[in-house]
Length: 280
Ligand SMILES: Cc1cc2nc3c(=O)[nH]c(=O)nc-3n(C[C@H](O)[C@H](O)[C@H](O)COP(=O)(O)OP(=O)(O)OC[C@H]3O[C@@H](n4cnc5c(N)ncnc54)[C@H](O)[C@@H]3O)c2cc1C
Ligand code: FES
Image (cartoon, rainbow, N blue to C red; front, side, top):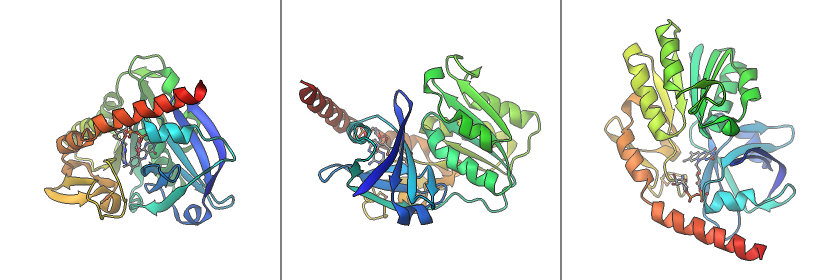
């Protein structure tokens, strides 16, 4: 069992937890993820390692409550435990030779982008961060991004905080103003990553994207997370989750991500009904 040492609500749908898992805390690196099960009969879900503290043996996760499993996880309180917590899985984000980087995060993808920005900052790279949210209430991790970024631009779709618009607009302006990056790293909804790649392409800057397909085993066995990258089949859990953005078939990835939509909706509704019964 893995104890929840700390729980903090970041916004109405996003929660941060520190889980006691010293072996993972010792080895986890930015860009890697864990797979957890909340209880014995629960499903396995992947979440990114949002930070590791070797001194306390804890691993930070930040998750958006979107369906049955994240609802069950969010229902756990500090001091309670979850059943399985396996990792670190996947390849760490490549940092070699990158001295100037622009990190682009969207929504809860910012939870995945933050440890990457922190890793580059700790290596002495110049870090520019462009982060986007739907509205002011959903803005998370501003203080943390400020602390590790040489430049931080926040945008909201409705203009209720920061600049109004989507992340690609300030990104384009930065590139047009002559900012030179060794790499742009985009983490967020697949559609956002697709448009970041299109925005950066004319400037010839390398783009890395962090893909988040359906995962089951997380060890390259089931094929659930397969993607087409550079015309070849890749498994996000073992070959990624980071890939060269110019090579990813985003349209196929978006189509595959909706494969289980009906099943997930049913699970979510059943979860809600159970919750309602318990409350009676
Ligand atoms: C490598 C990786 C890292 C991730 N990191 C984070 C993170 O740090 N924070 C965060 O909030 N979310 C993260 N996700 C997404 C997270 O796994 C899903 O939100 C979660 O599985 C939803 O499960 P659910 O039962 O609550 O919702 P459901 O209703 O079952 O699903 C809602 C949506 O979540 C996605 N999803 C569902 N099951 C899986 C699965 N087994 N594998 C992948 N995606 C799934 C699908 O897009 C689905 O439409 C990550 C996904 C991957 C692949
Ligand atoms: S999750 Fe099964 S192959 Fe990647």
